[in-house]
Length: 144
Image (tube, rainbow, N blue to C red):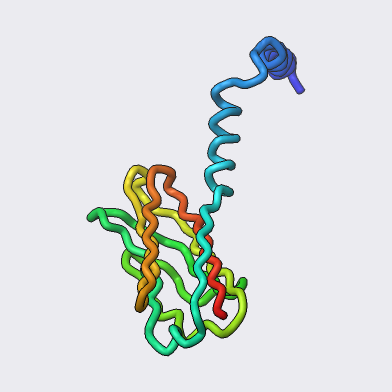
């Protein structure tokens, strides 16, 4: 390490030690990590007889120009890759019991939004996610 590098390191350490505990740079990094890990969860209960009819999970971007990438997992297994308008019939995949559907991905530009819908007979759930660029939704579907 040369003298210039050593002095720069000492100066940098001094500036960090003198700075308040939360500075803009570390706050932004922590905030980004927190956004990626936030998950919104919805629980839905269905009667097994309802699964005789289609129950569609639709993930879409209502704003033109939004790019969406990601995946849908059912009980930890990837069942579908996401694009700007993904629709999958869950009826054929669900049985009695509790199922976790995780929808995760990224969308750009971050200021736009993504809609997650579950549509079936007597069942409709709609959530709109926007602002962060990250999609992290969980649907818990309990079939009785």
